[in-house]
Length: 251
Image (cartoon, rainbow, N blue to C red; front, side, top):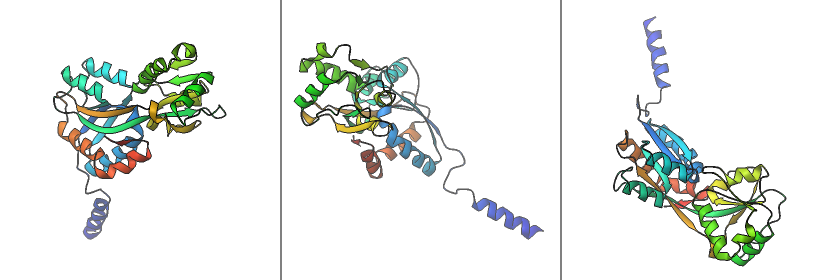
């Protein structure tokens, strides 16, 4: 009887992953939707390798600034670099903790069946915008940049009533998929994963804008060492193919 029990114990023990610690840290992260797609792949890999758990709130830039600026504590915050710099200066994130994690460009998508814009040049895009009936832009850095760009292009007044700027965290891609617009603009990484739309490519180079997304450690973060390990993992060379296939470049 005893040998049988011992054998059963050995078999059962073999089913327990030896590499996973008995108890890992709980890392709390507030992160921009721009890095959601690659991190949905990378974070489970990190969790499996370390035994840590990562709880993420995916948000828009304005929401991240409001929440952390209002005193909410997270181990890691990922947002456009200007937002991370401001939160560090205000004392909400740890001094010297900024780490650039990804570069992103603005992409263009349409609802299926909508006229395709001319993306061969800035002038081609300008003509296409003037012919569009409903334009969707985000509340994030891409949307704010485009609102300024339309002013510089001299077409802002002509586009009044045709532009819908979504609330913070809302997806132009999903709005297009719901039929709420003909053409939409946001970070490429936020368009590629949306079904029910047609992704056309980046905004023409002469009108393009690059956003750097950075991470910062929360001041008084509960799990600083585990948070640093996560940031090292998502910026390691093996993370590069995941970033690239989701429309991002390393920071």
